[in-house]
Length: 238
Image: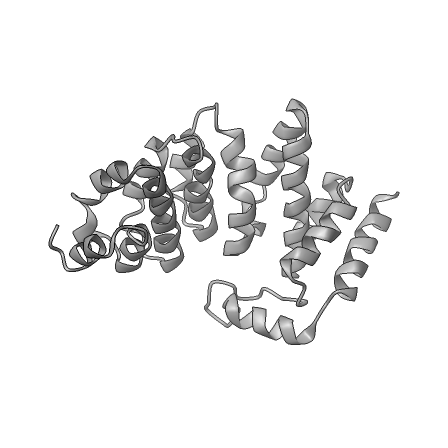
């Protein structure tokens, strides 16, 4: 199949699955208003399960097609491109994985909403750096680009799954003073994931820091602790 035929087919299938009512719902959920984090994003109203099915049907799409999809203002086109790339990374040989990782990292500006990050960063960036230097993650925490910082912390979910917490905790510490709510939520989520595997590691991190953590970050981090312990953290009585 020619590249442009593949691109046209993906776009046609997405539009066939479009639902205007769901598009309006998603537009509100992902904050696309002026000055909001998703400003200028556009939705067709295709749910993730259908986007996954379309991605599976077009798993052989070349990087040139994924690049065109990622350049689209349509959210679901970018999502399908990333879902194809995630599958390609998981199933590919060493060269395919490296190519997918490099392609992904070079297009951070188009991975620009929280679901796009969360569904792809651990499975591509996290997996690729599992047995490699994590220096890029720490560098990305200093980016002015919100989504690059979110990628840096969310990618560590792949490490947490292997009970490797050091980079998650170091990145969380670096992002304590971040001003964006979506970073507070991401850091809190990763801390909660650490706590699911080791409450001791979580509390060792929290005790010297929780009084200066953003409230949302703290609430996310302690969500699975016993109620009395959660209340003590929220009241500053640890």
